[in-house]
Image (cartoon, rainbow, N blue to C red; front, side, top):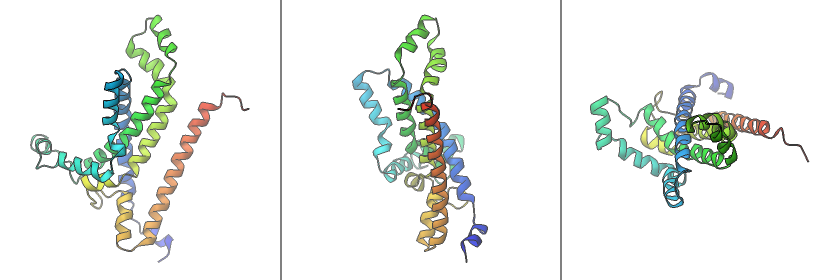
Length: 233
């Protein structure tokens, strides 16, 4: 069976599940990351160090470790999981919602760190000038801070989507590998390799490489727009 025939017979469900998971997780991390970054930069140094460590912990933990704690948290045998299931009929373990939560937890530090770095690099004189004009803090944030930090926030969003798209460890722990339901591309690659089907695994890897390349081109294009006003030396 040649590669063209394999592609024709492909089950593309893992691609749609991965894209859907990546988009929703990126949206969640976008708002949560910006909110957290805005709050943290206003804290005192000691509090900032502690909170920052907590918010970025999943970036240094092994994904399977994060997935294990998520499994303990959302299992229907645990208080939170049981509460969600009994009260709202919401089940997280072995569902697509589990994919989103796992991807969001793992990808969140990328959005948070990029947003925080972007906020910290803003010229504070812009904020002071806006205050002298009588603008409220909320209006300053949306009209001055966000536009000034836009390149960093955009980079964080793209990286967050890419990380969520390729998440494997925590997702496999929390959501499992259920065909047509929670089986993402990363899990599908591991599954077909286990069956010795290296050709299908290679096709999926090429797809992921193309997506990753597209993401990097998008980031470079955004960076190019940011730097186009700077004269070449």
